[in-house]
Length: 432
Image 1 (cartoon, rainbow, N blue to C red):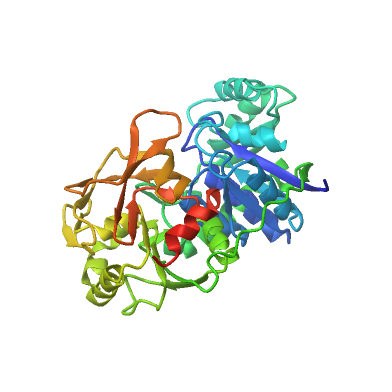
Image 2 (cartoon, rainbow, N blue to C red):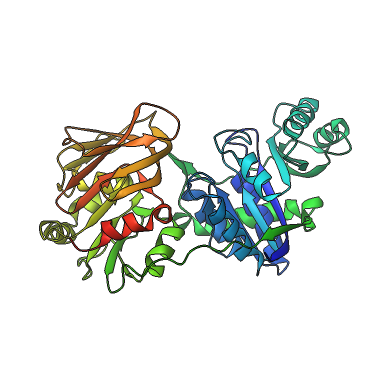
């Protein structure tokens, strides 16, 4: 088995909200400005952070999760990246040890050193104590230093640095500066396409802070071993799949698109907001996104709605995930309480909620077979039809998300990871 060595660093934190995406983007932008090719991976089923990180690095960002994708898939992706990258960065998810598998599990499996990022606002020596505890919690994870985010002053930095043990140096301090904060909304960060100019200013200013510390140097090389994955079967040869992709529908795994292409499908894209005509296609995919933010425009595009309805009544395959599922219902009520007419392919209404929601890994239990999937939404549905099945939660006995099947339409809040079962994907998208 051949292997490649490439400098790599895993950015982890004690909890969400510490600034992982901001700092990962800053490191990537700094090294990109030095002429280096930076490949970034995002731990977990995330759609928004990768958009930000892709703009910072200039290269597509792949999501990795040991449960959803499997160890061989992750190993293959790391090896492919190491073939051409000068630096590999991995942004963790949630807290370093949260979840099963956790960010720490991914770092340990592939031997990637961890830079611990902490928001140090309101503490000094305590930050060093917490960092030391996290660094020594597991023997199979190697933490190489601390990044202190929201550092107030030089004196604040010095107090933290002096309190850290010698084997856990202070790699960088990031000053408190609203100009490097990334914009957020419900479900996470704002989509990169909405704030590209603002993001450029954030990246470049944060990169200047990276230039002042140890992170300006490349981390140590990590050995990435080759792993061969079976070739995708060409079972969608000659099939044309139309995919909704615009401001309302953008939660799409690059891995899903790659698999469809590897299976021979011809992919075409359209906008349910802006386009008046649905492309000629054998199947349709309505992925997740933010339809609630564009509900009025979606409701008023009567031409595309009529064509999607005709596609549905022709019994052609349609996959609708989360936001796409909401689009298929009769009505959608936004956070302001306004209600808009959607496709009405399915009975029921969706309503946004100020708090709460559902998230987590699940098996999508379909007639075609089980796929690994995840759920993350802040809406609820009512008056829906009887589901054909429910998602099966990763580690909890309660039923997961409802899954609906009417004619050729399969709809659910679940986001499917296509490579987890190519055979089931073939059956879903093939003409009935």
